[in-house]
Image (cartoon, rainbow, N blue to C red):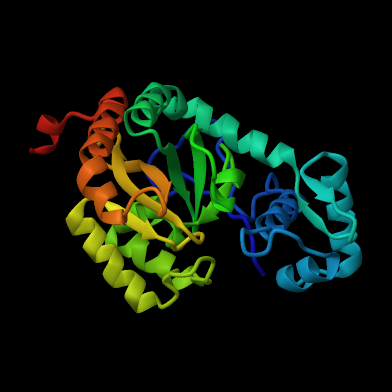
Length: 287
């Protein structure tokens, strides 16, 4: 059964505040809340629309119980029902995610530099973070050019894409600690979403190693036909790669080589400025 399990500080040696998250066996733990969150977690980019039977089977719950939870989430705005009588995530879920992102200050720090990069390159720029096997778009400065791809039109702050098919996703996965990266790859099912999507895990692993060494990541029509992207890392005060920014363009406007060689320096400079706003100091990290 898939579950949403909150982390605790019980083993850290720090007793924590009185409002610490209860252990699973404590009376304060709410199985109902766990089930509601598990239902929301069933909705993914590859399966954005689900029926009661789908959810019930995935979570090993009865259909009557699943229906009761789904109706509650529907009434609260966390789910929406389409004409097919199936369900998709509602805007309340996006609101929560964006509230969490805004609380970190990442969007506020990044915005002026995304705008500057957009003006300097004339292409769309994005900043995203890794969330499980997906990336979550934090902010976006859209190009004023005409003729956007389908992927460019639909991507907005709060939207998600499969990490394995995106330049930012591969960049962030490449900089995960080895054990975390191994666990993520084990959980991932790299589905084909664009003409050149990497779907073999061993090939994806080699790509992540290459990205880690190169410092930049590219996506060559891996998310969508005609869409090219190049991404650079944004680091926090601890020197960890906390987010990625990218430039995206159609292949009819520019080649991938031109993006990397011609626009790469501007992209890296923008990423470095955002990192500095987040407290990163290269000298403090040993170079």
